Length: 121
Image 1 (cartoon, rainbow, N blue to C red):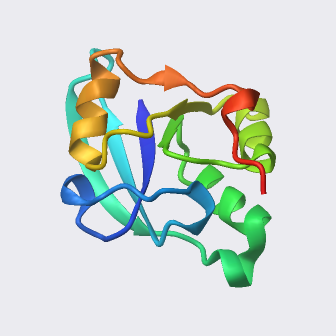
Image 2 (tube, rainbow, N blue to C red; image 1 turned 180 degrees about the vertical axis):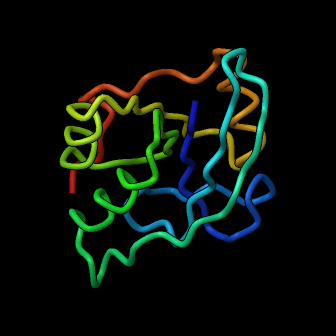
């Protein structure tokens, strides 16, 4: 399973998560095996929202072959596109660290995002 976490720096598992998916400067991409054991992680520069637009950021993440995204905030357009593409979107607004939110995710303590959870702006 491949999970993408929007974050503020290129520190991978040591990074602080971004408050909003589309404006995150970096993405931490984490691979797990079939038993949800950690395999690897890498920091990937996100597409720039100001120059690529929301659609460009969505396309960039889709190109990473993600199975799931864990976000603190996401608007309706990316939520719908990811959901329609079969990419699960999870939401956690209380855990600031990438590693910590992934530990919660593996433990089953991060919930799936619903349309009601999306940002309205």
